[in-house]
Length: 360
View 1 (tube, rainbow, N blue to C red):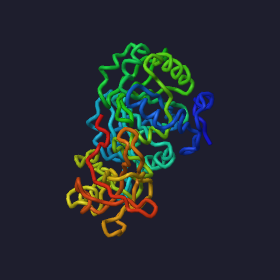
View 2 (view 1 turned 180 degrees about the horizontal axis):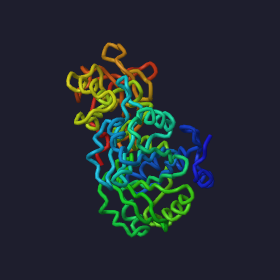
View 3 (view 1 turned 90 degrees about the vertical axis):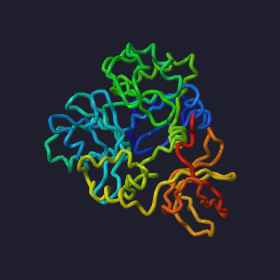
View 4 (view 1 turned 30 degrees about the horizontal axis):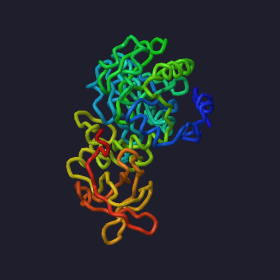
């Protein structure tokens, strides 16, 4: 089990630690609901240093990224980031990721912790253009400072104008006394804020100063459990649950990051899917009655026939009702459609809704 540079800090704060993607990670401190509300209403800090970082450089860097990712990275100017995915050869997804254009010929790819080795090997196998690749995952830490008070709480730590950094844009600048930190207006919570990329040797200083600066704004450390409820309320996909090696970006509702303005891995087959439609799609649903839909629970029709499974589900702390995502045949995907979630012996009625669940 790997530790992050902040593992001892989390333990000292009384965090409940669990194994996650091969790392010893804080799942919660005070409790999921309190931590969730902190991010929705104030500001919270996640240690997400388990994520992977690859640097792709050189005159052929863009060509490689265009080949392996579904989105159009040629649209990225320096200082912009882009959500994308790595399609596989069989219609599924190797991983979802964020692509940053750091310099004209330098890109940073941020991938999921559980897929670092898989993604690295996949991109290497497609690198017949001679792009330079470096895996920085073991050397870098990542803090997500999220919530509506993040800008105000963190402004004293940097000479950069945080309010001027638009969503999915970033700057490389000073932060908490450290130079050359990536300050990125990204995150997986839907409540605004930043992600801070720094070296492992720098993250403790940044963590301490962040909590000092945020003291008057109700800042708290947040665990992975609340990260999951926050992202689910926004309908953001989680790799391994809602997207995987066997789900296509078109089925998963990720057509918006699948650009057919270029050729990429399996693009012909995915283009056909987009044009002809798919047999199943990822839907969002809310339970009509009390209950909590859980990962892998069956989704059934009005006659009790199994039509799909719940890929992600929880009791929404913001909405106080059961919410979830799942794949069902296309005939059940219209907003307002009725489906049922099998919770133990009961088929609980649910309604297909438009994302996000949480409107803010």
